[in-house]
Amino acid sequence: MDKFDLIIIGGGPAGYAGAMRAIDYGKRVCLIEKDKVGGAGVYNGALSSKTLWEIANKVSGINEMIVSSGRSKFELSWKDVKKTLDEAIFERKFQYSCHIKLLQTETMQKLLHYERGAGSLKSKNEVIINHEGEQKVIWGDNIILATGSRPRKDPKIIVDEKTIMTSDGIDQIEDYPKSLVIVGAGVIGCEYATIFSNFGKTKVHIIDRAERILPFEDEDISKLVAGNLIEKGVVIHSNAKLERMETIDGEVEYELAYSDGRKEIIRVEKALMSIGRIPNVENLGLETAGVEMSQRGIHIGDDDTRTNIPNIYAVGDVSGRIALVNMGEIEARHAVEKMFGQKTERLSYDNICTIMFLHPEVAAVGMNEQTCIQNNIPVKVVKLDFSVIARAIAMRKTQGFFKIIVTNDKEMKILGMRAVGEHASSAIQAVGLLIKLNMSIEVLSELIHPHPSIVEGIQECVRMLLKKSVFKSSVFKDKLSCYSLVDGVKTPLERL
Image (cartoon, rainbow, N blue to C red; front, side, top):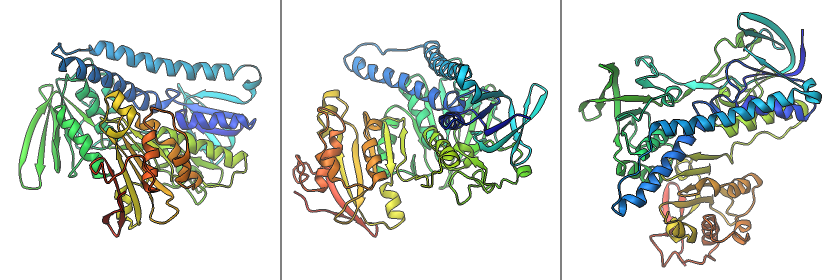
């Protein structure tokens, strides 16, 4: 029986990152993947959807310029879109496959062992690998479960991945659908609504059970994104309950019920189910090894990333925590550092940087206003409109804002930030670092930022809190604001 220091079941972003970190420690690792290395981080997920977003964003940007000058609308065939999408996926796939092959040559061959097949636990140290009718058992001192997740389905709706689809099927369509209904108004649903409305070839509908899209975010963000979607022709069915959805004569018919008693029946060409994801835990042999489950995923014990079985860890989507590629990678690296590096510091989830590929782009780190109000946390909030940032003016992209939330005391430690607009995702890392290091906003106020750049707006935000900003909020009242939130009550701070 082959023996390893670490066995990793699942070769997606989390599992792959864990394997590479274990190699750093000179440990012998077996990485098991039943399908494609890279997982949903490459296929039918992060890379594919963001490639589509980038293409659609360019198409929309071009049309904003040329249509306003009276010229014909620019159109890109779905064949060309699919070609670019396939190229992006192949490029990343090629990097992974070459990396594995080269790592298994010469010195590294003794450390990394790659197995194609389905892995399952036979005991707390033994893993069974099934591949093409053959089976073998290997031994591991430590085991990481990184089997990812898959799209959640409604048991009342038949998903054929042709007419009614999940994110696993949407990339395989043969042409732009004339009309598309998206079930779910969370991040993924709104991202795909943004993508297809930006291409300008599809009438998009969104079914939203709540009063507004992106209900976990502050209302000003939700309102701005929803307004842009509506301007692009998207129909948002708010406060709507999906009574039924079925394929009839090759089209999708769905029925909605509203709180006021109204009902509505609509037909579209395609449907996309975007109602979350569920962890891949079936046939893992968790019960055999004694690993406990929670409602969201594999049970994580008191030691972060570690399950109730001390030598078995769960990372990424399968853990039921935060389903993000970057978090899966960090969790896996953290687990390996606990095993072989004697790391005692717990993994912090307080400064997670996230991106929402919408129109405009939305980036987030830490708390938002809504969370502070719900948890009765007294804070100060500063908000600055993109229209007063030189780089945004130069780019002619002035829609958006920065919002920074700090403690309501003299120290004013940063609790969270939201960036909405062009280059939003590039603007939050410094704030994420300050949250992690528990440092004062004075650091940002004195840092020399490049000019002209979007991030200068962050500096102006913290200067406003410190009452030494260049632009005074008493002059640009509609562009700049500072206020406190105590017991849910908003009180404007002294204007300068």
